[in-house]
Image (cartoon, rainbow, N blue to C red; front, side, top):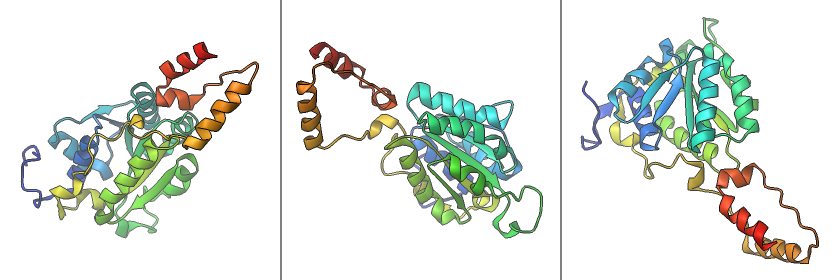
Length: 244
């Protein structure tokens, strides 16, 4: 199969792993940090087929998650890491750091085929119970029909409000399924994985109330936290300090 081009027939069936790579690329994701795993090979093949997205190999899964966190902090864009179910047990420390620092990270975890679950075979790990307390949202995908919807929701959660890590645990048979249409993985809004694409704004009444409190204050103090950094409000804070 040659490289996937967006001018091709959007009704054409593609492997879900290829669609996942395409979906991330169309949301502005340029790099995926991770470790190859037998359950995620179709995703890796998709990265090879899609222009504009690359995989960066790390020494271990923990380093991959830390790299995704660092990338998110430096660029303000979604950081993506991937691993197999066993390897994802190295994610918690890095995801805890990302959660505490409000870093938008998407952790993709490949796991055994859905029909092999609960058969006490290797890599049959309940990843969701491990990652849920460390993320804004963690969900398992056992049906390819749900993958585009879950991806959209995960990226939205990771990059809006207070940013933070999210995770999708994807069964191997979902990665390899070939019945999905190319058009299913073309988002309506592209390049929207920046935390600056949608920052929360206070209601006008609350802004007026804060302004009145500042005017009445005698020794005002500016406490600029992580939200100011995430919103890039450096110029506004400097102007406010000169006004005060």
